[in-house]
Image (cartoon, rainbow, N blue to C red; front, side, top):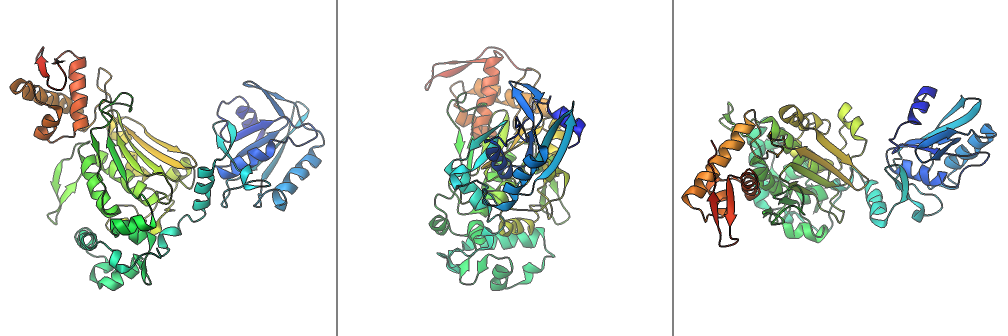
Length: 476
């Protein structure tokens, strides 16, 4: 950071990686909290010699800059106060005759970083330092095993805990979609060992999660599940009922993948196309983006967290919420082909059947959503969670279009509503569940269309449970 960049930061409102403190001749007591917070998050600058009053900053300078710098760096590098060694980048500036010191605190590879005791573990939330709670500290401790746990043996398991149906289904899928792979010609024993599904007498955690029996998974990882909810509104408060679909429990990750992907297919245009092998191809940029997000979530979930991964389909967006943060800032992951999965065994199993990239996080595929819909894909990354949000495009009257959002998305939206009106015309007492079955679309989509038709005055509801629909005008 040069002098001009420093001055620009002093008029900026974004402070998640920048903290200014009035120092004088002594280090401020709160500086250690900020060092801990930056070390535990994505790093940041500590600037000494700048006072803050509200949103205004004043250059006050420091006295005896050399001593202050030595005091600060000696503490960070000696491990006398902090549990790990911290190597800051040091800068000195002279602004209006006053000396300002700046120290870049890098994100640590050995989280949690704390001073004096584990209770003094801090994280950065917005522009402030906050003491980490137990769940956040535990998440950091688990992250010390990032990329390791999925290959470790699950001691309570044996090879008999493999779900045979899943194993056969996986091998069949591999032979069809990646026929040249050497694993296809291997015996079952060699196949399981080479793919790290089995380690000695036990399943690995990755193998257990991916193709184990549900009972065995829950014995090693209690309350294992992947959640999917379809919510007929933009929030739970707006939704009535609270949700129209909730995914039932599945055996393992491979079975969860197929069940969830079928629900996601209903949200996008899916042109039918056959490849040279006579296999139907799912050729849709929107679907490819959602599939990549789903596989990314399954590969990078912290399965030992008390929180569970979940997909939430709202009327205006789809969210993939994942326990466990991305290992690096999103901007770095998007720019570079960085392959650093939390669960390498699971990642390899998805890659071998061409459902995941060999390098990187697949952000390029997820970002195809933006080109097709003109809506930003939003990546949120906190200490314990990462969330990827796909927003639906809007109709001319401001409503969101879910479901078919291809090139003719407004016509598709309108045609669907005409179909619903025709069903109501033939049976005014029809329920939204019955409409869902007749049109083979999810119930949340039907409720969204009905709400839109009511809002525009095309229909109204007389009565409640035993009520009926009244058509006021025809949609042409």
